[in-house]
Image (cartoon, rainbow, N blue to C red; front, side, top):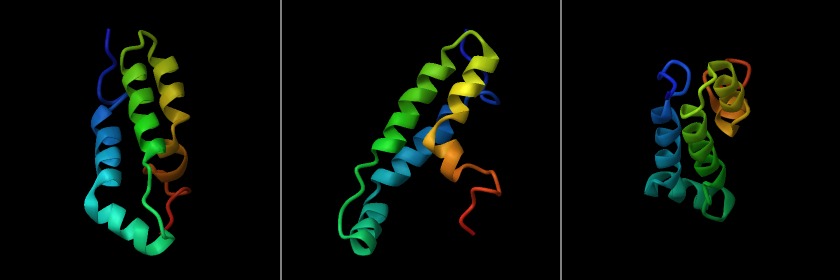
Length: 83
């Protein structure tokens, strides 16, 4: 049975991936770093979240999602916030 959105919210990962591939983000990446961002981490997170969404065990799904790039580096955890 798919996990509910409070366990695995695919929209969060989809939004992060679509933000990364947007022309504005890519322009900023080119200006700041001299190259385009490949967005592989965001794409990998989206695939991982899709697998976690289909898991039967809620705790296992949470642990898989907690290991994603988004949760480790960006997420809503104030300890990881750059600002």
